[in-house]
Image 1 (tube, rainbow, N blue to C red):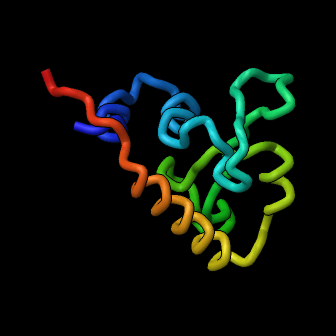
Image 2 (cartoon, rainbow, N blue to C red; image 1 turned 90 degrees about the horizontal axis):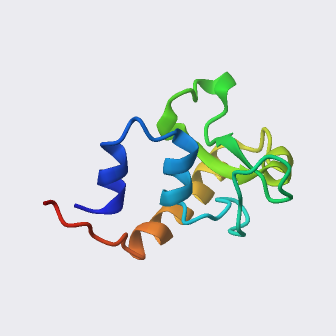
Length: 103
């Protein structure tokens, strides 16, 4: 079982913590470190990949981004944002999450 499957089995873990683990502590837009502490310069906000106004409300539609990155990318062309996300997601999958023994 890999780390992503383990986190999916833990709905008691807050979404931001699960996303932080999956994203390796990096903003999905600029790929620089993010933090979860309010007041931190690199504070992570939830970014909807597909805008809410276009039906993007599921948790699987959310990634963490810096506030500044999130604001700068509000309402871009939807297909461009999806393409950027897919490229980023594929690069994360290629790095292969570490496996966790299923004991």
